[in-house]
Length: 452
Ligand SMILES: Cc1cc2nc3c(=O)[nH]c(=O)nc-3n(C[C@H](O)[C@H](O)[C@H](O)COP(=O)(O)OP(=O)(O)OC[C@H]3O[C@@H](n4cnc5c(N)ncnc54)[C@H](O)[C@@H]3O)c2cc1C
Image (cartoon, rainbow, N blue to C red; front, top):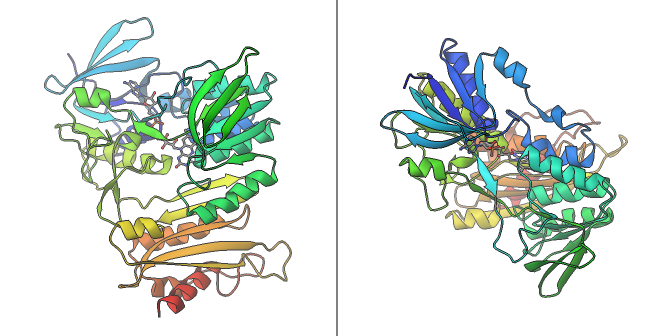
């Protein structure tokens, strides 16, 4: 088998980043991407906005087109699935849609097989009309169903995908019910902050059913679906979307002898190297180094997949870079609200062994005398013993720079700042945008006062 240079399995965020950064470092290196479908380098994160109609055409979700990628020197094997890796021979078996097989030799291999949506083993989960959402094909199917006169949607799971989709389907004119097992929506936030987002959903007509455990999905004679559960869940719907999280897609890697952890995520070092020589991995299929605890957690996010893909690609092309790590920074827009978080919230920090103190302030995003000011809720978490900054959750109006304020905290976390130095930061001020003390400073001051 002749070598194809660098072979990459998966053509989404991690795979394409690996390809582009490998090319950046070694322009002559042949790079082949094996892509199961026909949509390389699409923005999965943009799917809710295609379903909502805010992004009118699905091809607009492409970060880069096939032509762009080929012009950058990449060889794309679209509609090809990798079915086996032979780490001794250094080859990958690939089959196309007709079942024809091909063997690709490699010098270096990057696994970027991502994640797949979890389908809880509920009766009725495979009924027609029950959707999951992770690929462009799935997005197109749901989009077409939604445009086809569908009136009622039930969403199982109110994480960031569930809440974005509640917004999207409501925007499309559907009657939406969100069902969540936890006491509040947006389960990666403290429940009382999740409730602020829950109230925003309700303000836009979404029915929010928290503390409800789905037991089954039924199909009725008139073709409608029913989501039934305890303690008192019975929601009629024409379409059901299940968004209860993802699991790493790593069977192919495991079969080849790549080590995975108890969650099934590929174990990599900070260089994104697996236990197999010449085999790297990145993105939703791997665990992620967390900067606050200095150990890996599973944090599947597009932003992380980009950064890890870059490191895997550079190193596969001969460099020696380390992934700096992540602190779980994420943001979500739900109707007119934005919720952002970074680092640990109180219970996570406590579980990680810190003496967590969380303090909440609610202040104007900019000087109230300038039109359009709104209140921002900032909850800052730090370690009482050392004063170290551990994280923040921030909620406020779209346009009030919520995510960028959270990103100030993320930058500080990356530099292991304490809360005193967060208060010292030279942040910008002009009345239409902030105050002499930005909400970030005000939160830091409140925390320091509480800790005293
Ligand atoms: C609706 C939605 C919204 C999101 N919004 C955000 C957001 O706002 N911000 C954010 O940071 N993240 C967001 N994410 C998460 C983000 O999309 C993922 O973290 C990111 O796509 C991970 O990239 P990846 O390349 O690791 O994996 P994936 O995107 O899962 O891609 C892996 C690819 O590998 C292919 N593949 C797998 N096995 C094989 C094989 N054997 N042969 C060939 N191909 C194979 C798969 O078909 C897939 O295309 C969102 C996800 C969803 C579903």
